Image (cartoon, rainbow, N blue to C red; front, side, top):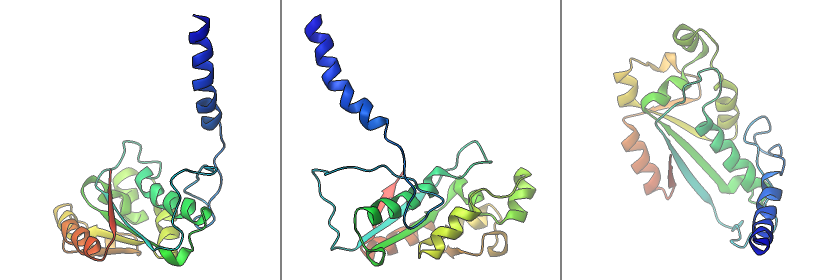
Length: 179
């Protein structure tokens, strides 16, 4: 029994110590996308190559008063790679939004009509767009949900479909991250 306790102490202490780390503010998107420091990772980040990623975002969460955490992941992606030494010019990010997540890119007037509050995603999406992140809405979702360009935030681009945007971006060597 004593050996078992010692074993668990040696296994759990590093895990607990790591989980107790505090998040830190990002260098690129300062108000969102907090990250953790990972000291001396075994799998090294290549800071010489372009990192192109497309996030496939088709869902939202039940609490309409908070940001969609999947959007926040894009901010985390930018911040953690900048912190690791990747120049911002080598970071290329796109969000392809469809399905239920389409409501999260509505302008404040439309969001307020739907949920009774301002869109909590507005500041985050604006900050992402300012840093060059493409935010693309599926045109099929938009048509199905009666979301015109005027009903979205100004940073939003509308594509023929999410499928089209995902294929085109992947043809441009963006790597897909799907939640």
